[in-house]
Length: 158
Image 1: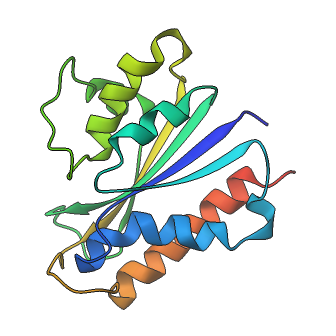
Image 2: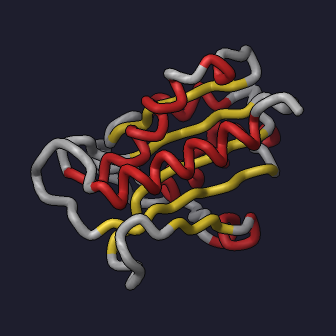
């Protein structure tokens, strides 16, 4: 199995925006994720320095919320690699407390250089509530669990 990093993005005190962190927390409780080939990384909202931990990984899986998708809360999206590579910017403007997955990819490409992995997937979960409150809505929590189980199935030894 290729060495894989799973990165969850979001702000857990902004309701459904914290779904990426929820997925990482959920996966950390699963015994099958205890592998030297799997890194579970809670990127939160200000983990710019964590990008250096991606060195040596051949595969990246990102989980984040998406606002204003036009779809019901909890709708899952999986972006194809061609769309992901098109989003990489040469020098993205970021605020250190609001790094998002597309910006993280842009900086990871610069940081990792020739070691930048070809195998990248991004799971996005539609949300509408990003108010200042702790906890996910039922629809978004259920979607987070579905994504976690997809990742568990994908990364479990066959």
